[in-house]
Length: 523
Image (cartoon, rainbow, N blue to C red):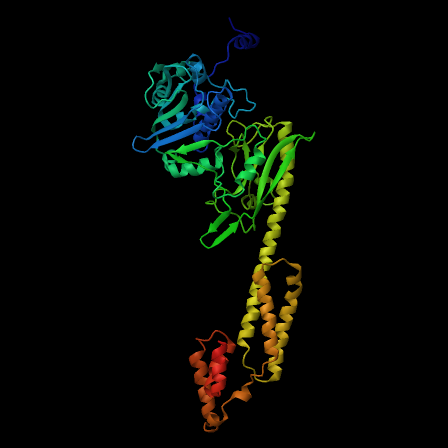
């Protein structure tokens, strides 16, 4: 009997939804575009666990720690925290279920229950070990990636996610050893796969990445505004700095007063400006700061503190270019240094933590971010204009100085007056600029120095006819003088820096000794 379309639709509606195992690809390798992001995810879970342990008085405040151990020899990664751990009774549900995190999503950073599987895409075996307070056994849950790959090759693509999980996971208990704390959670990645850059095993790259994204403290030894900012952000419930180490070395935020732009160029954070974003009814939405520098240029990639970074629960969302659409020019995003710490937990990061979910509160945040971007863009353009003008002024002052240094030998008074008039004109052109601009002292000093040189020039009487050695010239025929002059020009032309320099070299043989000494003293 031929079934009607209505009957076929009715049958489909009565069936339970089917979830294929390919969903694992989406929440592992398909979730992140940078392998290093898995470290951020595991640290996110670790700090939430530490916070809960502190709240439940299982751990004294300030004593939480997160330890990352990288073994290149064994190609293994271990990330351990001393938070409350997961009780054995709920470990299976928490570590095997997907998309049903027990976190309430308010003050805690993670809340989707999928980030913990991020490491599965990059190793053969992903192991979770945990123990909660007063429990004797350590609970172990393993996810076998090699087994998953084998099953994927010979399994019908209609196999359900649940069936696959049953085949690639196992859960068991073991006795604790001397390395197991009273309460902890540990992520272990065995036989980490080697990609072209081997990021996951590169301690330098991991440290640099986590210094930017992880909730670690400022380095107060390098950044004099650390204490001030810690106090400013302390009103935000999710703002804390945690003790995170990699192979025993502590990780700190990359901010410092000194900015090393290149080998020959530096800048300085002279001060910081704090600001606040508010909701429509005046309640705090976000707190932030930006650095007051000389805005010399777009900071290069090796300056890891560049950009206005947005942070939720003191974890970075996006990167240094996240706010670039709100600047008048994209490049201005990396001219700046600063942070925005979200105050309102109704603004939630998306699953990849490269942006936020669309909410009215986030729209309000974007409105005020736009204003901030315009303000900082104005600073960048103003400083760029000032710097360009300063460079032009310095170049012009150098030209005038060169002219004055070369003008020490005159044909006659008219020649001297022409030079004086030329220098006066050039200084007069710069005079309004010098008065209206707040140049550095060295520029103003150069200008004043040139004014002093001009006065000396006006009093000078170093004329050629007065210092020519007439006695020696009387013994030389006119034809011979012309020949000597031509030879001197030919010999000295390529070695002369200017016309004045050449004239001086040509005339020197015909000058009195006192004139020669004067010229040598000047130069």
